[in-house]
Amino acid sequence: GQNIDQPTEMTATEGAIVQINCTYQTSGFNGLFWYQQHAGEAPTFLSYNVLDGLEEKGRFSSFLSRSKGYSYLLLKELQMKDSASYLCAVPSNDYKLSFGAGTTVTVRA
Amino acid sequence: DSGVTQTPKHLITATGQRVTLRCSPRSGDLSVYWYQQSLDQGLQFLIQYYNGEERAKGNILERFSAQQFPDLHSELNLSSLELGDSALYFCASSVGNGTSAGEETQYFGPGTRLLVL
Image (cartoon, rainbow over all chains, first blue to last red; front, side, top):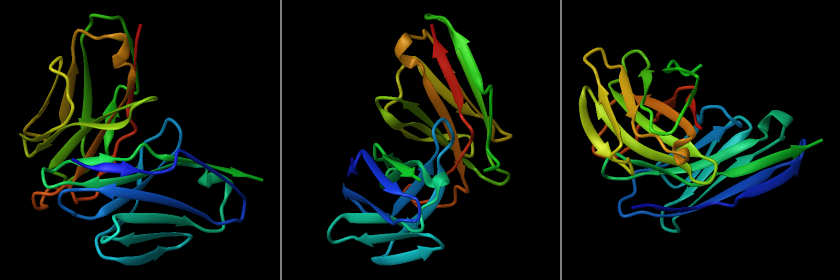
């Protein structure tokens, strides 16, 4: 199975940058997902990394290092609407997608 | 709006009862996934169907069952409900033409909030 670890909570100021780390252990690597979930709402897809390196998508970027079993999600120019839970997820070879517990990001004015 | 629909949005019932949650995937998606999310457990994978067939099973209780119909909509049946079954139940869908891994992007419905009293 997958073992996924990410911090429980992070707080940052509007306009700042926050980096959410995710470490994982998996028997067979098939990429890594990041999802955003506002309280009481559905998770929404942010990014999918399958190769090492940084992928940038507007204010959000995601980095992957397969050799280190490590990824991070970088949120730049934070806005109040970015206050949400960010879920790291790793697929396995048996069609399953395992989610981390999520990191709750609070953006303060 | 992801294109995945779920009904009902809210459900309040009593212990010992049975409920059915319904999901319609995005147009063209063949795979449907069910997840349970409670405050203390995070998002837990329950079961996946692909084109009507069960493809993967997670930590789904024996009291729970699901199926996917020929029109690709899916239902999750929860029976002999207990207080601990109170949670958000999400359905997600994906294209379904991936390999053996769960590497397809999943699109989540708005969820059904179940409260068991």
